Image 1 (tube, helix red, strand yellow):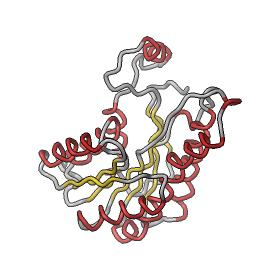
Image 2 (cartoon, rainbow, N blue to C red; image 1 turned 90 degrees about the vertical axis):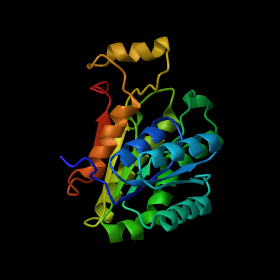
Image 3 (tube, rainbow, N blue to C red; image 1 turned 30 degrees about the vertical axis):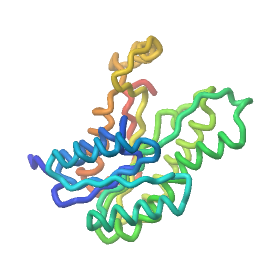
Image 4 (cartoon, one colour; image 1 turned 180 degrees about the vertical axis):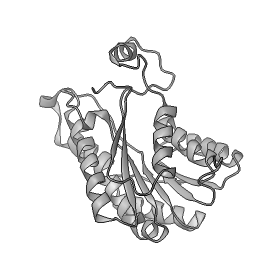
Length: 243
């Protein structure tokens, strides 16, 4: 088995400075890829993540971007490609999450959710398209179990992620055969947090535990290194919670 299947490849992870995005970036670097990340408010986290990526023996860089701004999205993608010399894998990880009763959601809340969860991946993918087409690259979107199942107190979140799932499928057909496009849809993912509500979800999950960032990273790594022939798929990483 190749210990570095992504050696010589370049990946860009949006929102890669912390939490799940950081784990995804480190996983790709561990497989040999040079990695760029974007960040918005977490400059110190971004610097730490870049240092940790470089400690794995790969090149790495971080670029600040407000992903609700189309110009900043394109600038970040272009800067990452210029800095690392190309692009083979785009991971649209950055996301927004919020709990709100449906009848109270404002237009501003709705638009902010879609701007981050649906429009930003569209803009990043569009900016990366010519480079990924040339490299026969891959796009991996981070969706959600909420995009597959309706959560009554997360209407704007669920709808934005459902739209991202459909965008995945649409891009997979529009940009084939050069680019494979897939989506990982996590369920309840905890990152060391301790909360009784999280355990409630664990008890409801057939695998009898909540997910971890490593579970999501392994799924992303599968789409990054597996057959290019696989495209247009939505892979639930939820321990069976959505069954």
